[in-house]
Length: 90
Image (cartoon, rainbow, N blue to C red; front, side, top):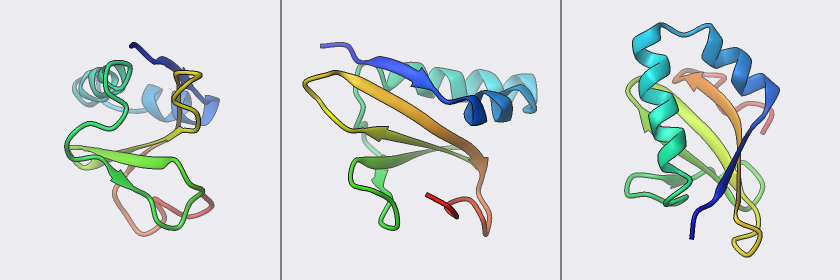
């Protein structure tokens, strides 16, 4: 079963600001979430609502929600470089 990917505006803006190389790698990782929303290496984000996960792509983190497996929707909420405020405000 394939999942539908939805990217929030905040994440889209972050992608535009990245280098072409980083953007390509992150978009590939996001596209891969359509086939497997919980790939090897994904980690649940503890300080966020249930169903929030992150995957690591180099120095960046893709933070996303899988709220309902029956609906088949993955919502990418953030794309951020790993740092002190990566998970603030989740």
